[in-house]
Image (tube, rainbow, N blue to C red; front, top):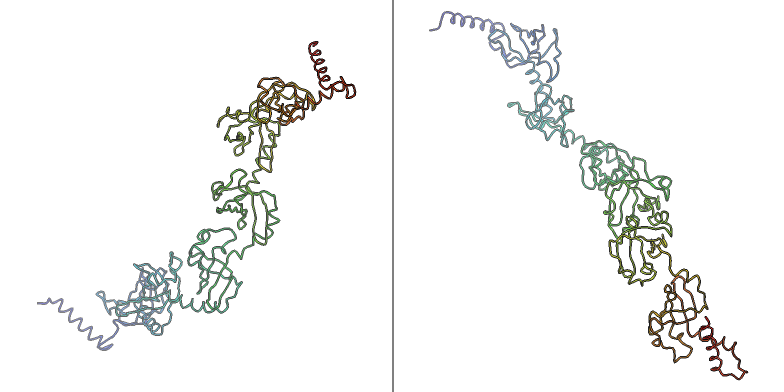
Length: 572
């Protein structure tokens, strides 16, 4: 059974409904409709609005401004409001500015969607898979793939900024709207592309954005059309990979180098907008001048050295080292190494510079000659022994050679070499330095005075000397003069008579007088003759003891001469 109070309330409600029906009709039609109201006052976070009904309505202030903005509403303003309920439990009319804007927005958006027109909106939030967009009261979903033509890493600059969108899909019953910013950009790009292609000419300077990077270059978006920026046209300096100078999304200023209207291929360049470092390079880098540079690339035939950004020269492998022959350039220099080089040749039209690495370091043979002129002494390790001499290390990379004939004054070369071993430390005298042939001649025996020097100074051609036979050979005999000087008597010079010209009639150790035919000071050797001595003695005897008209025989004359000589020898 209902209480008296509830019955009274029900009766009152029925009276009020009857009164309202009598005033406005049985169906007011206000709930769910949009009405116009006037702001009476602001109470805390609400605006009190008069919509012309029996009571006032309250609307939250946050509904009077788009997301993230400060509401701007004041008493006296006229606003459109949505009636959610005609009367709540407090007797107030429940109004909504947001729903009123939404209803109005939906109506306008449906018209734009049907006409395939763009709509303006503001990105104000992030959601899973995309972003939320305020379309003048209606909230739409912007998928991440529809934000831009290219992936966007930072959407921050786009947030809160009004921009056009294309409605892809909308369902008013479910309250779903899907929009695209990319579709608008693509349409704009197509228009820009057409305009750009029509007015594109070689030599034009354009602004672009790096779209993609490959090993051979970068593709630049010129606003609807892409152009290729080859790696060799990015900068005058050597660039091994475009990523060394460019990043995706980087704004760049480029020049159109080539344009093919038929294929619509566009070749771009950045270095063309910079000063060419090769202009006047012959003046900046004169021949024989020394400069410092950085090794940028190493090949089998040499190394490229950067003298300044954009200017490189080649050090051929033959110009890399004075001493290291047939060695790969990578074993002499390393990439990025700072080196000193000398300018050998400059061909400005061909953009080529020949450099020398070894020339900047100085010729080691010239440096050695300056520090060790002929006659000076050096010391070094025997690095190698060959059949003709010893090689002695006299510098980090250079050797000097002691010929076997310059090892000993007395011993034969082959015999003298047996007293030395690889690794021995020896002293030697500098005999000669041939810079052009890169040869240094050394001598060990020259460290001591020549024991035969006094004899060589004293003996003259035509002198009669006493020798001692040291070796008997088939073609003659080898003799020693005063135990320090070697001489040789050929077979034909052993006697006046042909039958006596036999080497085997001489014995090692036998004393033999001979006449000096020639003196070879360089070889420290005398050429001798016994035959010549005998002929000369005969001639002298003829003068002293007889003549052809005296009647004396040759035997008598020679016998007298021999007796006379013996007598003189006995007296001595």
